[in-house]
Amino acid sequence: MVWIKSNWRWTSLNLFAVSTLGVVLTQGSTDWNRTDTFDTGLESGKWAIRFLLACLTMTPLNTYFGWRSAIKLRKSFGFWAFGFASLHILLYIREAKL
Image (cartoon, rainbow, N blue to C red; front, side, top):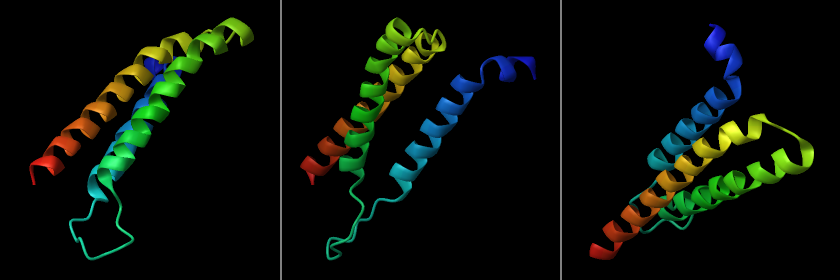
């Protein structure tokens, strides 16, 4: 319990990222006749960019505002950005083969 209290930012970031990944992977539709479909490839790319930008803002938050906890979160944001970018590339390759 002490570990969760001391690392609650890291835990909440990872829970948010896992739930976002779940939504991105389960909301996709294969029905080509619908116009309001959820594009999994596009959404995974958007989330990759969002996590990358969040990762890049951690150093200015530490430098200018003195938020020391930001440096601890930078690595997790970077890993999630890489994960979503990898998913985006895999979905693009899968779609290009069809």
